[in-house]
Amino acid sequence: MTTDLILAFAHHIAVFGLFGLLVAEAVLLRRGMTSADVARVARVDAAYGAMAGAVVAVGVLRLIFGAKGWPYYEDNPWFWAKMASFGAVALVSILPTIRFLGWRRRLKADPGFLPDEVQVAGARRLIHVQFLLIALVLLFAATMARFA
Ligand code: HEM
Image (cartoon, rainbow, N blue to C red; front, side, top):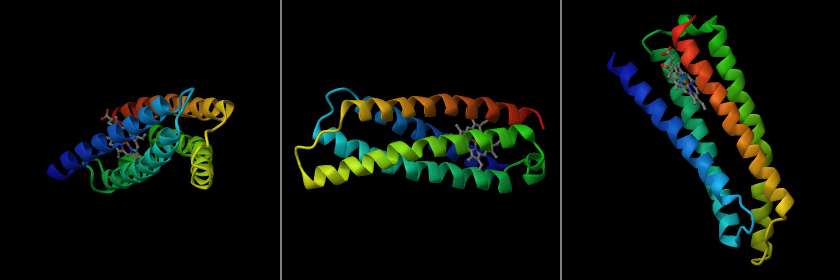
């Protein structure tokens, strides 16, 4: 019971952290980004990747050591829908990450480098797609906890 409580708490903290970092990316990706913003968004994105790893790690621990146990989830279509939506978030996040790493490389070579507005808008759009997919993850999370 205590283990389940600790894991549930850790899962929510990690998920809120993930959401906060994505909000930070959306705020940084604006028209007229400065060089400092370019360096910052790459750092925030690295933290976002690490936090996603923490969400998965704690999630897996909940599956194994949580109150319901793996048998509750293995044939639960809502659980698999949640995993598919989370996988979609991970896929959509790849392109912005590649962009940010490219910008950081250019910035190192040329301290006055600023990204193209079209690329900034494209990356911001993909961050917004991730917000929508995370809403779907939340819907399936609540469903999977109630229906097997
Ligand atoms: C963006 C990613 C994620 C979000 C937003 C999220 C959100 C949530 C929320 C809100 C709950 C509570 C549901 C409720 O009791 O109403 C939950 C429960 C849970 N999540 Fe996640 N989650 C995410 C990723 C994951 C991953 C990757 C895994 C597994 C690898 C996972 C495994 C679980 C488990 C086992 C529960 C317990 C459900 C139950 O009580 O039966 N989650 N999640």
